[in-house]
Structures are given as C-alpha cells and as structure tokens.
Image (spheres, helix red, strand yellow):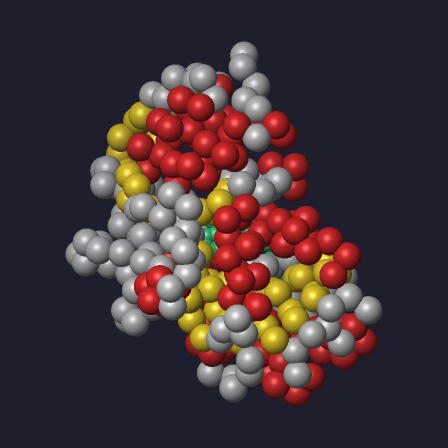
Length: 288
Ligand SMILES: NC(=O)c1ccc[n+]([C@@H]2O[C@H](COP(=O)([O-])OP(=O)(O)OC[C@H]3O[C@@H](n4cnc5c(N)ncnc54)[C@H](OP(=O)(O)O)[C@@H]3O)[C@@H](O)[C@H]2O)c1
C-alpha cells in the first residue's frame, strides 16, 4: 500500500510529485479515478487507504470553463468537497491546490495575501474558490495551497504546454509573443513548489497558504528572459485587452505571507528558477 495517493497523476504538478516521492506514492490519473465521480472517489480511497491524498487534478481550461460550467464545478468544487468529507471519515490528510485566479481586481497593486478577500472574474476562478472553501470548511486535516503560472514539469510530453513552453514555441516559429499591457504575475516552478509543499506536510500545516516563486514580474520580462536563455529573439506584440473568452485580471501576484511569517525560507526567485529549468539537461533549448 502506498502511503500517499497523488490525483491528477498525468498533470504537470502531479507528475512532479510522483517524480520526487517515488515508491512512497501511488499516482491516480483520470482513468483510475475520475474526480467528477463521487462514488468512484469513495470506492477507490476506501480500497487504497492512503495516509495522505494530494489532489493535483483540476479542470484547468480557463476559457473552456465559461462554457462547460457543470464540468468545471464537478472537478474543481464537488470532487474536492468529497475528498475533504472522506478525509474526515477515513483519516487521511488532504493537500489541495487552488489558484491566483480566485482574485481578480486590478485596482489593488500589491501581491494578494491569504487574508485578502477573493473576487474571481471568471468561472474557472469561481469554481476553484468553491473548491477551496469546501475543503477548508469540511473540518478535515487539509492544506489548501494557492499557486500561480506553473511551469517546470514535463507537461509538454503530456500534450499541454506551460507558460514557458508556449513562449518558446512561438519565438521559435518566428511569431510574436502576445502580452497584455501591465500583465504582472508570479511564475512558479513545480521543482520549487513540490519540496515546499512536502515541507508543509512534514510540519503538519493546515489551512490556506500562498506558495509562488519570489518576485512578481512583468509577463514581458519573463518572456524575454526565457527567450534569452534559449538563444531566441523575443518580439513582443502588446495588446490592451485580452481577447480570450474568459476575463483575466492583469495583476495577479500572490504574497507568500503565511509561509514567511512562519520563518520558512523564501521561495526561489523566478529568475533563478527559470534559469535552472531552462539550463537543465532535459530542457536544453532546441536551436533552429
Ligand atoms: N498550471 C497553472 O499555471 C496553474 C495555475 C494556478 C493554479 N493551478 C492549479 O494547480 C493544480 C495543478 O495544475 P497543473 O498545472 O498540474 O494542471 P494540469 O497539468 O492541467 O493537470 C491537471 C490534471 O487533472 C486531470 N483531470 C482533469 N479532469 C479530471 C477528472 N475529472 N478526474 C481526474 N483527473 C482529472 C487532468 O487529466 P487529463 O490529462 O486527462 O485532462 C490532468 O492530468 C490544479 O489544481 C490547478 O488548478 C495551476
């Protein structure tokens, strides 16, 4: 019996947990456990009896969530609520992930703290907010970690590109990188995130934490730095309004306030994490 069950085993974050945890963890992809199926969740977890459940599964299609609302709610809110209910019954500890998209307003120009009131501007953010509220309100031993703009895992091979890979693919194709004016974010490498979450688990932390790479940065600066490491030229095409179906806030950094108040070491700066990711052997840039 594996001690830790990792849901969303084929996703970017799920794969990184599995790579770090090795034989201590059992990965469950969508085929083994559909988070939209409450009966399947109960059946599977009663059979496996893990001590910890890490839920890295989510309906992450931000634009798709506007149209497929029921599906987004099932995976991002109802499934996590069931995981939390079972955590109380079966006695496992639950780790669940949420997002900077629970915040939306652009007026407050400082990174959002755990104590700031959420106000999502799109359905994805709303469904994730319902999920975190359900987990935190279930009376279970649960940790909810809000993260943002993940990269650093092998998502390309899983058929989905992360932020860095999308920038590099466009630059390699000679296409401009489309960036909304004023877009500021907190890119976070899963290589930094996974050890930080495991540190919280070891400390038996519970409740809500923000965990992102240090140093909010302008999206354009991040794109330019990624291209520079890959030896590519970054042509930026500025837009003043994001044309995608789901609204997006321009300013979404999170402050890792609880983490730092507890005296934990600052998360690595986005510049060093990006360099580490792009310079590591498996990600050596392909130069055309
Ligand atoms: N990526 C980001 O930039 C970002 C930003 C903020 C927050 N987050 C949060 O961080 C967590 C991890 O994200 P990620 O980047 O690792 O996402 P990801 O790469 O998209 O992985 C999510 C996984 O969830 C699985 N999934 C979807 N619907 C499912 C269902 N009904 N039952 C079981 N599994 C299902 C997907 O399976 P399929 O492969 O079969 O679709 C996928 O493997 C999520 O909670 C996400 O909301 C991510």
